[in-house]
Length: 205
View 1 (cartoon, rainbow, N blue to C red):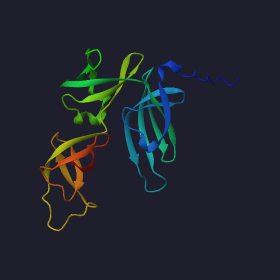
View 2: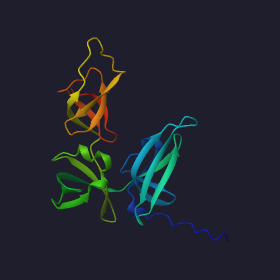
View 3: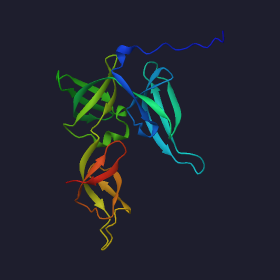
View 4: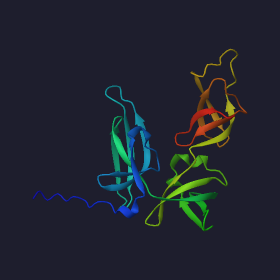
């Protein structure tokens, strides 16, 4: 006997279903099954070293014990993304580091820490609907809509004749978030933004 204890399998009633995803698709708020435990992703960083292949640096917190783990996944790696019981909540308002939501079925109001949303918290707006994942009746993560439409309030003026979308410039959204946009986008333009990484998607139609 080596003395190594094999952790028990996860109770099936806590998991609705799970799928394999590429490590590049890991996002803050995802719940992953790793080493027979459930982890919630708290931070991600895509790293492209000078030598060797790219990898995803992922910070996670174990959902049952609260221990933290910093894991490196190669671009070719796949991970198990777990889908827990989800409920739809409407965002009401922010009070410091706390977010107030209302359950769309029971109309019960709950208070959750802003850290559950991560950097995407800047994209929360009054009345927005979000999916809240529950683990043992406790909220563990909040998923915002994949995209939002916001106005560009600051951007360098358009240079005459420079309309190529391959070149990007800095701009500021109406919520104060700074993003990179194509050269032809100017202040006053409505754009679609990816809430997971604050990146420009397209000009709003």
